[in-house]
Length: 252
Image (cartoon, helix red, strand yellow):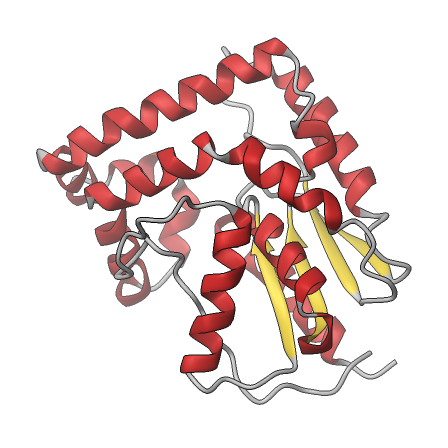
C-alpha cells in the first residue's frame, strides 16, 4: 500500500520509561505536541506509520488529524473511541474509578519498593504469562519502569484526563483515505478467577461499539483479529502488530 520506511522509532510518553514527568496536563493534545517536537528534535523525518495501543490510539489519531502530510499509515491495537467512552454507563464509570484508585495506591507501593519486590519474585509473569516470551534484556527495562512511582502517577493523571482527551478527539473522526489497520483483541480481559468480579458483558458491549466507530475513521480502514489476545495485544500477540505493519508496507 505504501513505500518502505527508513527507520523505526519507539517513544515513551512523558512520565513513562526514562522520560521525565511533564508538568502539563497529559491530554491527547499535549501528547501530540510533545511527540511532534520529539520527532523534529531527533531529526526523524516523515513519512510516518503510527502505532497506538489502547489510549495511545487517541494520540495517534489526533496526530494524524493535525499532521496529515506526515502520516501515511496507522495501526490501532484494540484502540479506544471517545463516542462510547464519553457516554459510559455507571458500572464502567465505577470500574474506571477503581483503576484510578489502584494507580494511586501503586504510587505508594512503588515508592516503598513493594512493586519492585513483586517483579523480582515473578508476580507480573505469573499474572501475565505472555511476558515470558520476551527476552530478559527487553523485559527488564519495562519492569523497572513499572517499579517507579512516576509510572503510576502518569497513569493516574492520564485516566483522570480521559474525558478531556475524548472531547479533543472529536475533531479526528474523518481521516480521509489514510490506510488504517484496526486490530481487535478477542476480549478486554482474558476470563479468569481474577476477572470474575468485572462487568464483562458491559465491557465487551462498549468495546464492540468502539471498534465499529474506529472502522469509520477512514475509507481505507481494515480490521484484523487478535483472536488469542486480551486488550494489550503487544504482550499477547505482537506478531499480529508486525503483520499489520508489513501489510501497510507492502505495495498493493
